[in-house]
Length: 242
Image 1: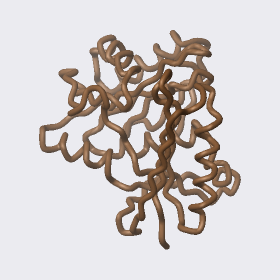
Image 2 (image 1 turned 120 degrees about the vertical axis):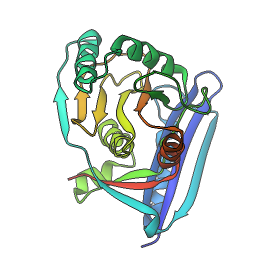
Image 3 (image 1 turned 90 degrees about the horizontal axis):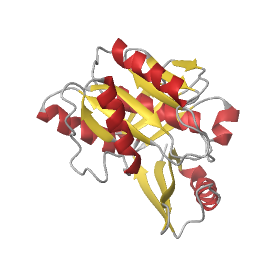
Image 4 (image 1 turned 180 degrees about the vertical axis):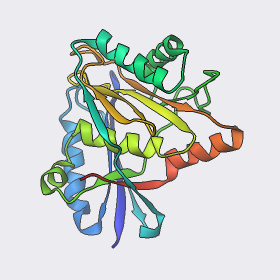
């Protein structure tokens, strides 16, 4: 099967980044998904874009790593404060004691284009470009559920987050990922780890807040760091979702 990777990025002069999405799809679906992603870029709550970029690349089947989606747990929280307490609890489960420092650094990631790569023990920042961060890319979902499949050209926060988290924490040197969406009308976030799977926290910020960012917590040496970054940014992944 011939497949293509499609990446869409939209931005404007006032807000900067507005929207982004990506797919890995069969050749016969390429035209329809290009149209869907363009429509998504043009209809976003953060505003109209001044710039839309579509990048399309051929992908060989042997380049793709197939993964099963993480197990999902949903934790209902009444407000952002309660949500952060849930994150603290899961960080302690991982043996990470410097939780307040991690949460403070998480807030610093809100202005970044990508994720902060943080040493889980020393809290040293490890991303080569601190402004850009690490962008985990080249990933998509694969499912036999026709309803999920037909919706995946539009925005589905849960499916897209589950795909990203599954790819990220499947790497043996990633201890956990923390994420809050920067969409003002989406308040759910998550913490994910190979230890306990994907924990969906229903409220991690207040409605209308444009703040959002992510941290990848890493443990390993310099060679492992370089290999991990290569995996996050270059490895093609399809995540199988029931």
